[in-house]
Image (cartoon, rainbow, N blue to C red; front, side, top):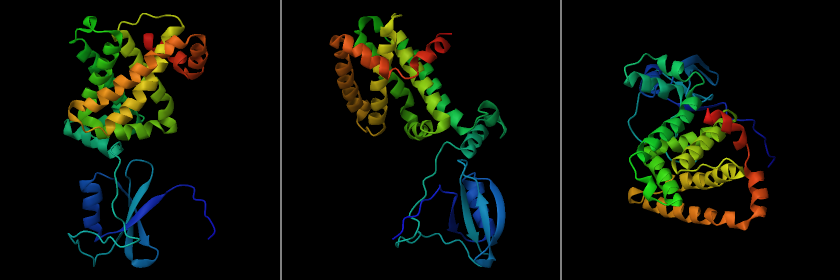
Length: 277
């Protein structure tokens, strides 16, 4: 069989009931704007209507006025659609959030003019502020440095716990061209805030080494936490403690660590002035 090279997914088409039922469901219930309609080119008696999920792709529906809604499970034979997973970071979700706060529909885009991606990255800024507020209530002076760092990471995860699925979706957005550089800035701000809260006063090369090493711990910890269902995330705390114990051994390696850490700094040195100001 000859291999075909696709260039991306433009839209998915489902067979729906009548036109108004489809609009009521996709736009009325799910908040996807109805943007376009044309005849079904394979069946002129049907309509082909388009909805915007908010992520740059489309969902389209074939409608027929003779088809009525059937409240039963769709078939599961080979070739049938089993389910559709909706990404929560969308224009529709922002507008729904604005409405829930009693704001007009345009308020969300005025707050986040770059759209859902900007809103998803803002979640990290908010979590940092909440983390620092939680640390203010702790006796950090009575803790060892590693304990302070661990307390900060767990405080941040505690803040995000009710929004675990939103965090999962936001990670996917950070992998996009829009999110990549912003994601690097966000993780820098997070680890920088943690180190300052832990009492770090380094101004030499150690400043960047500490932040690079903590970033290398924080990323895997977030991924572990997303799938952790233990009470109070105790398994995540154990995972974090093991990772911190490992990186605490690295400074003892001497000059060879400096060379490796310098190569791993990435763009962190570019963000320091911006964050400190």
